[in-house]
Image (tube, rainbow over all chains, first blue to last red; front, side, top):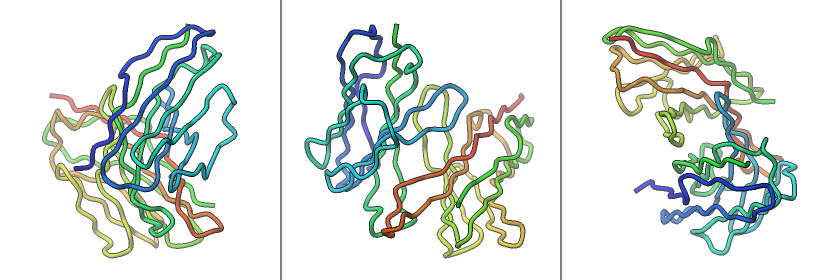
Length: 116
Length: 117
């Protein structure tokens, strides 16, 4: 089973709202990722958690706040977003990139976010 | 620094024809290379990856890719296109950090494959 699940599938929010995206995997993977993907572009890495600790923050604005409550769950808290933040947000997980340079990332279906 | 270049943002083939999607890499060390497919409004799905075990890599859905060091290429092929192959395809290279971990995938810009009946 190589499934990564994401909820919700679609989210529409105003610029003053607070919302959260959720990602879950039950493959025992120790790394989890958030990506942002604009239309007709490749995914852009936002955050990486490894062993439940934040390992990489790609200079993402503070209106995006990641959280890793346990090894299976990854959240992305959203607050005061801008219309240009509208995109597909993808979650991924991988076994252990600290041990395997060819570690494969498995992606979820994404959350389509629209900021009004 | 590792990077990949996908030649052709859009490739159109007829059903049953050969599919060839091009990817060239730039890497100072032996790279780990991946091909992902993304169907409309979905996440990315791994098609295959190169890890230096074999230069010809077979993946899912009848796709394969050949690693050619002399040409710094990792082109994706499929002998006979099917309508269901229509999707966006991304080539990617993994990048290790100074600590020896690999967290980052560097993606190419993608190639949209359309299959005509």
